Length: 149
Image (cartoon, rainbow, N blue to C red; front, side, top):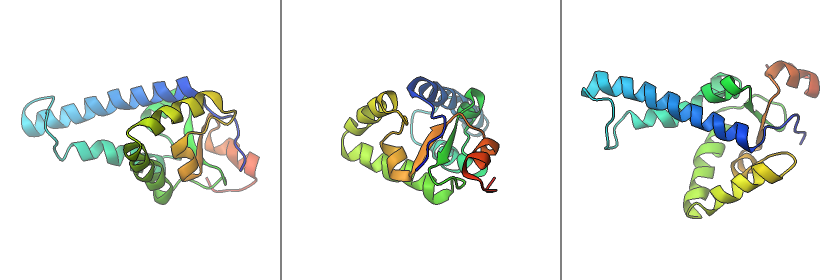
C-alpha cells in the first residue's frame, strides 16, 4: 500500500472542473448535430457519454482523463497495477452509490480526506484501492519495480 507523490485537493478539484468543461463542450457539439441545440435540459443518450468518459478513459489512458492529463495527475492503483474496468467501476459506480446513500455527506467527508490526509485518498479511493498521483506511469515502474505500463 505505497502511495507515491499524491495529488491534493485543489489539483484534483481543478481537474474535475476541466473535465466538466471538456465534456460540456463535447456533448454540446454532439447535441447540436443530433438535436439542433447546444444544451438539452432533459436526460438523453448523450448523458451516458459523461459516465463512460469517467469510467473508460482512465482504463485506456493509464489513469488519465483530459483534465487530469492537462494538470499532470492521474489515477493509480495502490498495488502498482494499471487501473482496469473493475477498479473504475468500484471508484465510480460503487462509490457513487455510497455518496447517494449518504445524501452527499460522504462527498463532504471525501473532500476533507483529500485535503487533510497525508496520502490524499478519498472515500472512492479507499473503495477502489486507488489514489491520485503526479507520477507518470514510467516513474511508477521504477517505484514498484515492474513493467505493467
